[in-house]
Image (spheres, rainbow, N blue to C red):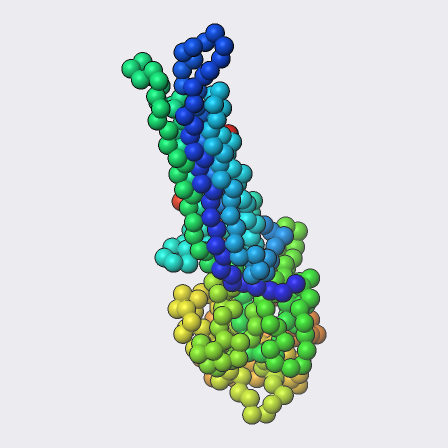
Length: 358
């Protein structure tokens, strides 16, 4: 399935049905009085997060979603039926914003919880609504109210606990494949990963966390070099970053320290808040170094980089040194584990006043 993390769509709620001006006319009842019912409410447009979806590809092609209008009122005290709502199912982690104003309408952080995007118009009043002791034969009626219409921008940001950063061919895909059931494409050329991959890491019984691997960054990514920094948005909800570095590159001219500094610089250019997240250094491919030189090479790298945070040296391909990293990550994340993001009352769907009319 093609990975799509952005889409623009148009949505329109249904108009309310018009009220009816009618009078009861039956044999032997010459003054039956008003019996025109109200119109039905138009259908609304809702969005729901779905755990089974991981891409917005459906909305790349289906760009217009229009709810049905409410039915008009009729005589004999009959109110019009409400138009059915439209429910748009999107991946959990989708941000829905107004294309014209930039206002964020919803963040789908909780699955199966509907949020209102466009409210259907209320139905108009029939003349039965205006009957009173002083107005015995009202002829007033009102049309239905129009439903809301919007152009929406959909932006997917995957939900993960840990994000992987690094140059192309640093071994990020090999690492996520070694610690989870994710099966990303792995090859010996740059930019093998073209879209984010998610993997669930199980440390022990009821102990797990989600890792996100994004396409590799290169120097100048903030200006569009390589695949650019468009995928960095998928790390904005993570709570920890693993900075994966190839400590034993095949190219003798390559400098792992310079590459690591370039990644940090691109991160800071893109988003200072993302740069401020906790970040651990993961030195990969130590199996390519002579065993007697490994500790000295790692120490020299850390000294040149002037790194003060946690450091883990490992080999994802040989599956060496993974457990200390996984257990330390779980201990870091466990105090922050929450069942779900707190619901935002701004996006609550109001109860419909009546099942069949407005």
